[in-house]
Image 1 (tube, rainbow, N blue to C red):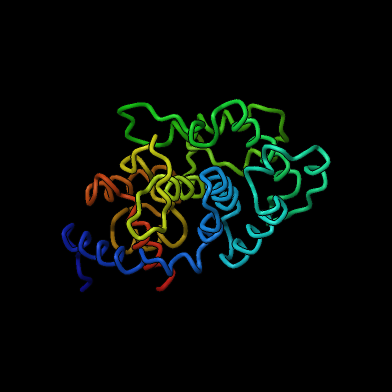
Image 2 (tube, rainbow, N blue to C red):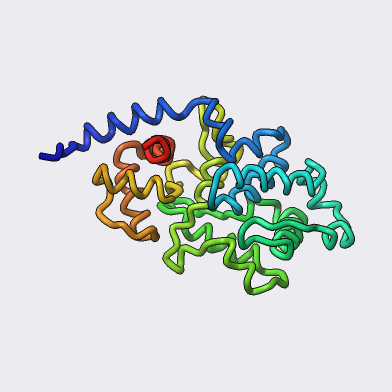
Length: 255
């Protein structure tokens, strides 16, 4: 007979695994190592954003290609975004799976627009007081990000909650920026968003483990499943629910 875990059992397990995996050595094998190279707020958030955008597939390949992005920008992403010339941008050659040079060039131009005209990345994720979810903020960000001329194909690189996407990569980026992490993995450099409204980055590992632990009863990786998982994690910790991403991801990767 399979054991049925009580809510108390599940919370204790997730707390235990969070403490096990939420350690500085997590950085060494994770894409979050890229923004950890920087100290300036704008460099951290730009490198984190671009790294998160290409975070699908093999982690080693993600890290290698994110490193290439940083080198293209002279390892000074904010300075490059603000001061790069048309010649600099047109000379870019880059590919990560379906994210290619044209996509990267647009992302640079759009980030420049955000920093010059809209207060930067943090200000581009507006959250209203009393908001329970981060989804409306993501929709507003995507609309703003693509408010300048762009190729239609490039829009696929930022997911849209209104199209039922669980928005794994954007939610991971927001976790990095917003969570106040005593162990120094997540940066916690954005104060305009409460960690309580964040959503778990739902990938193949977290989805599989969440199903096995009966935290959710759906197998589709979509926003409905994500809300179900978010509600359960918020029941366990209403102030910092996405800390359990470390537990679910760690359990999934380490089988």
